[in-house]
Length: 227
Image (cartoon, rainbow, N blue to C red; front, side, top):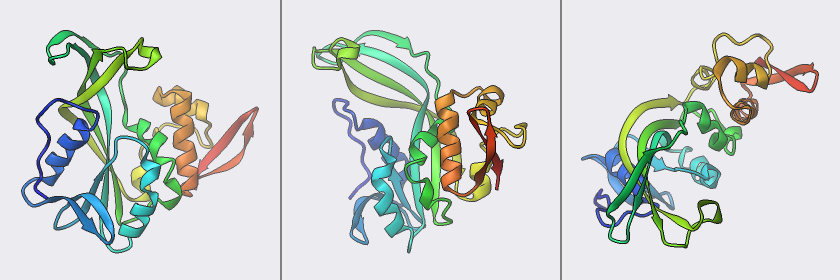
C-alpha cells in the first residue's frame, strides 16, 4: 500500500497517519502483512509500529515479530499542545496553548504494560516528543468533563526531539544521574521534577525489566537500587 496520509477532515487517527507517512518515506510500504500481522510500515531494515496509547495491545505482535525482525515502536508524546475550537465547517473559532507539557519519562506509563518483555535487542522504543494541535467542536457529543465538546482530531505541527530505547543502558539513562543510592520514588520526584505517578511508572517498568531491584523500605517508601 502506498504511504499516504489523509488530507480530508481531521479525525482521531490523523496524528497516527501523519507519523506513518513520515516514517514510511520513499522506501517503505504501509499496511502490509508480515508473518500474519498487518504492520504500519515495512522498511527494508525494520518494521515500524506507531502507537499513541494502549501499547499493551501490541504485546503479542511485538513478541512474534521481534523473533525474526527488527521492530521499532514509535510512541508520540505531546511536548506542547494547542487547543483549537472549530465550527461545523472546520473554521477556527479560538486557539489557546495548553499548560500541559509532556516529557520522555511519561512514556513509562505505556511501556510498563510491556516492560517484562524488554529490553530486547530487536525492539526499539522510539519516544517522539511532538507539537500538536487538538481540534475541538462544540457539538454536544463529547465527554461531560468537556461539557459536551468533542475532540475531532489531532494535527502534527512538528517534532521536537526523539529518544531511542533499546538496550538496558538506554532505559537506565532516563533515571536522574544525581539520584541517591538507594533511591525512592519521592527522590525521583524531587530530583527530576516528575509527578509521583510518573516516577511510579518508571520504577515499575525498570523493575519488570530487571534493571532495578527493591532493597528495603524507608518508612512507607520502597528503596530501589540499580541492578
